[in-house]
Length: 470
Image 1 (tube, one colour):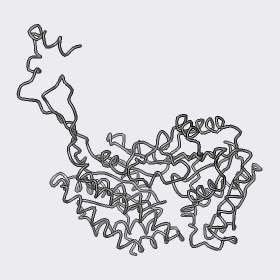
Image 2 (tube, one colour; image 1 turned 90 degrees about the horizontal axis):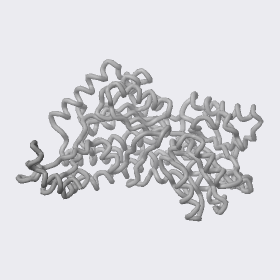
Image 3 (cartoon, one colour; image 1 turned 180 degrees about the horizontal axis):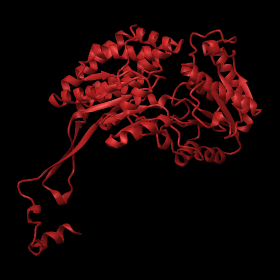
Image 4 (spheres, rainbow, N blue to C red; image 1 turned 180 degrees about the vertical axis):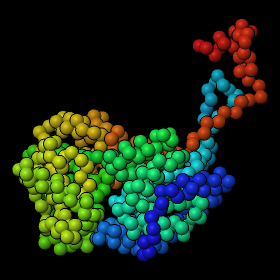
């Protein structure tokens, strides 16, 4: 694939101006939006295998099937949902005016914003670029996309794919590193969506602030698993293993640490070991399905967590295989009972390492979760509805899957977004459509209305004031 030159920062504003002028001249109709979405779906479907190979090349090795599921299926599913519901979402929504303002009438009209900027991350480089892009197109906007510099081949793939679907005055792609990203964040978009780390999210929000650009920040954090005493650890281990080691843990809503009853901790570790062996072979030979760490910087960061844990005397358990630094192969690894001073507990892990902490009481576990930043995801495991309701009542998270991991993010009708340090705003489905629209309030006054009498001298309208002020 031809790796052409990156975008020059000086070219960003002229491209934005071109997109906005074209949007102003011809705001997309329902027919155009639907056609755009259908063409995007058709082209992506046709190029799915190429997409999977391209992502794998950026990672040096990534499971082709995981790419087809997470970047292919998930994106196609969301586009299908947008197409299915688009006409209904675009319709004006009648609302009541209350008896004081009758016989007037009111509506909320979803209208496009203009040009939406999207900064996509590297971990699911197609999904997290095209789902917000498709949502912005559905809402009638033009789009300027900045993919991650850490997956450069996929960035070129996205640029070529989108050029096949859209004219350049409807969708544009900027490629490049941090300098381009910083300048992109400072453009006066009508809305800006960023997916990435909390640290970079703060910089993006600061860059957007001078323009008062509305932002949706999809960040991360340490998403906890809470296994309750009644739930079988074997089943919990199976579902946690899927969420943790899919994409080698490089998922913003991957389980970040596990809280487990002290009496069940060792059994849980053995259940995790059995799951890893069943998935990747007793000798860790099934490496086709095990994704590598994306680059050397991320590998070194993850290795530093293990080095720090070992220096602190913590028990580090490799569940299968061994590390191969040259291939950036980091096997599934558990760190037992780390304190909050351990590096692995201070930042989002974003890799195949899993801290496991034991607890004595449910209240203790809930208090531990609440003593930290609000997570992007929370995963409680219990068959007792009262226990789940207690956890949901006493904690706050961006989203929750009960008795499983990850899947709340795959449900079309559930919004995806964080809270506090894990994010701001949400998208997916109609929530995303509304986020990337202006929900315009419109009031129609009637030919005859009592409001015509509400003017000085108010003494002449005392009868009307006595009626409405009560």
